[in-house]
Image (cartoon, rainbow, N blue to C red; front, side, top):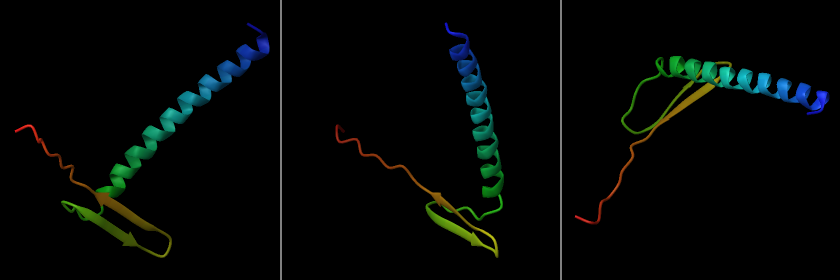
Length: 68
């Protein structure tokens, strides 16, 4: 493999790992933020302040088994 292509593949892989790590950290922070909001069985909860509007949507999954 060409040396430049190997260098680019190494850089790509490094960034891919950093991206996965950042996504994991973001999801962790989102879970922490959700813990400050009221819970609902279904619907949307929104909190606002001078800087941010944060909304969480709670959903129920429904299914119907017609074979019964």
